[in-house]
Image (cartoon, rainbow, N blue to C red; front, side, top):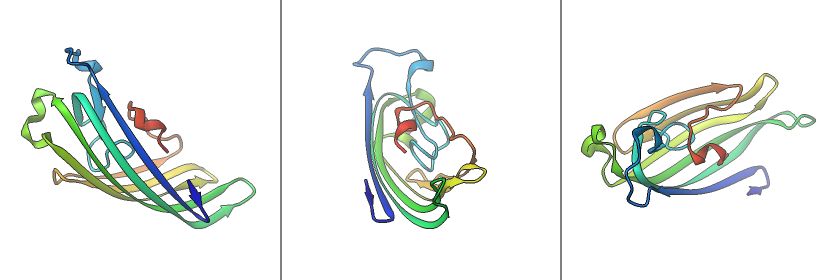
Length: 145
């Protein structure tokens, strides 16, 4: 929802397998700059999950108003949980997980661009640089921004 030159994005998502066993390639996945900053793409896998995030973006530069090109500085805070995680993940991913990120994003003359750094409650961090088409992470959160 835009407000003057700022944008606030609220996102919630979740999924369940309804207590049925899923093959490993059909488990829910989270992780990456869009779906859970601070974790690698697809690092979190399990049978049930929920997540919520809030992002705040502030326009820092107009590149071309005619073509709708601008740069935004943003921050994101996220909370979530992956229940019934894959066995190889161990106890590190049990319970509630938190992450936060700082990023610069926008449309530029050479295409969409995003540079972000995310930190997660598991003491991991991820630097992401994207130019051109957005990185698809294979989650419902791919459509949040």
